[in-house]
Length: 76
Image 1: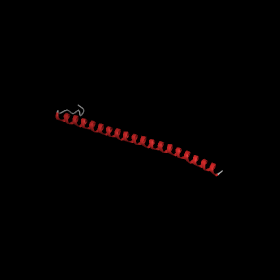
Image 2 (image 1 turned 45 degrees about the vertical axis):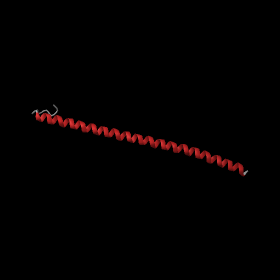
Image 3 (image 1 turned 90 degrees about the vertical axis):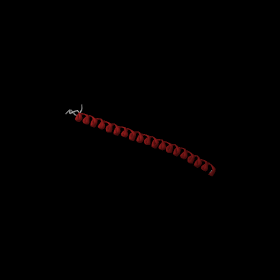
Image 4 (image 1 turned 180 degrees about the vertical axis):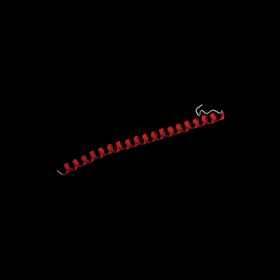
């Protein structure tokens, strides 16, 4: 009788281990996916920041060019 109980316990522990392993693997996958999303967001944000910086530089150049030519139109 005790042998049957030990086998059941061993099987239950084995099943628990399998479930735990799947849960941990899924958790790790989600963490990796979340980190990829974070990195993509940071990259997109940096690209947007650089684009705004470049647009500002272009506008400043247009203003300078307009002042040199004596034009009052700052977007010429």
